[in-house]
Image (cartoon, rainbow, N blue to C red; front, side, top):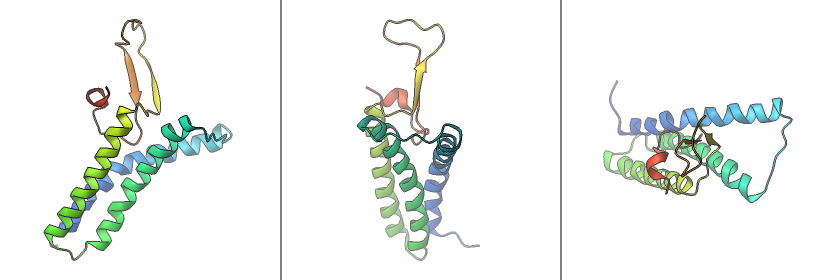
Length: 135
């Protein structure tokens, strides 16, 4: 088997595959267990639909990249992959800086001053260190 530059697109599949599974599981739970009530207010759009779209795009673009760059040279593949990662990581940083988390709360026994014991869960951006990105 010969190493091709297009195999670098597998990094996108490996990173956004679990986030797509998170969203599929939670969508399944919302539809079949909770009755599927959908909200289209701006808060739900920012906290649910945009991160879900990011997970779908983050997984779909590498699939197309694998196919389109199959016979491409290193320079073209690396340029396309770098553009993809810059856009996706930029989207993730903006999303985290806007506090668009899916699950959040306080640890048991945390004090009220400054919220030292809070946590956030990002389904799409689980691989980014949110504690150093949030303002």
